[in-house]
Amino acid sequence: MKDLINKLNTTSLEACFDGLQRAGTPLALATVVQAVSPTSGKPGDKALVTGEAIVEGWIGGGCAQPAVIEATRGALESGESSLIRVGPKGEWEPLEGIVDYTSGCLSGGTLVIFIEPMIKRPLLNILGNSPAAHSLCYLAGHLGFAVTLTCPDPVAGNLPENVRRATDFSKVDGDFIVIATQGKHDLSALKAALATSAPHIAMIASSRKIAGLKASLARSGVDTIQLDRIHSPAGIEIGARTPAEIALSVLAEMVRARRGEKNAPQAAMVSPQAVATEEGGGCCGG
Image 1 (tube, helix red, strand yellow):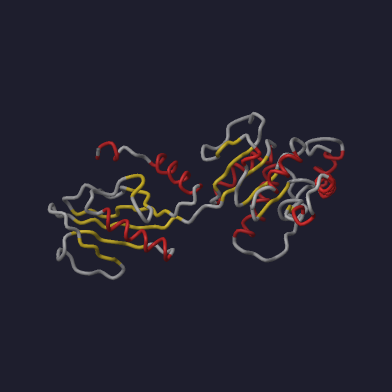
Image 2 (cartoon, one colour):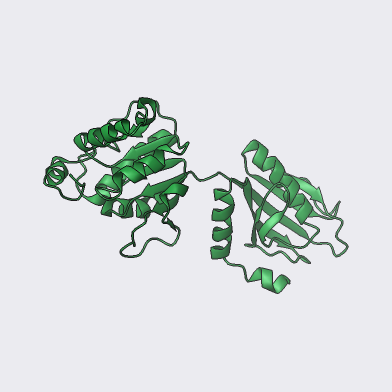
């Protein structure tokens, strides 16, 4: 069993982490930083831990696990990392900054383990299959967002491995929703976003286009309070022209919202060049 557990790699930990994060499960990462034999845990061993159990990975046998779980509860409550030492009573002198746990393990041995609470990654759901949507997928993961791309159409090209793919607008959720349909499924994506409780909804479109879409939604019975939830044009003004630059601007606005910046959004994402294309019935769908 130990040999099997030791084969768990970083990829399996990341997959487990993503799943538990999406479920809203509070987690800590436990990492063995020092081991004094005899111990089954070795430096570099890692495990994902909740306040109830070790759910993935390996940090040593049963003697260390209760201490790790108890320390995880404290770390999740305080939000602060801690360094713990687990071993037989009386084998070491107290050290400042290390919390000691006595182990009843008959074989002896001591482990020093770093407990790091994992802050929940905000969930970003990108609706659409446009170049800007794909650029958002590539950039958002680097800024700590858990990313889902939702679109009923086949996706051309490869998405980053950490991007979840979904096809059903009716099941959209997230902390941040960015509509990057740009002419395809605009109204259905907007309706799906407004049906969620997401605190931040943005749409990549010109002011003229979003005004028309809001008018259409209002005629269908969507009230003004709901429509006012839509940030558009999405992003902050950086003179963006390319899909990657547009994605960067949208992400900058999201980071500002995530960090609690109270300043009013300074939109105008779409460049004059892009607006001209839209007016000709191009990528933004007229």
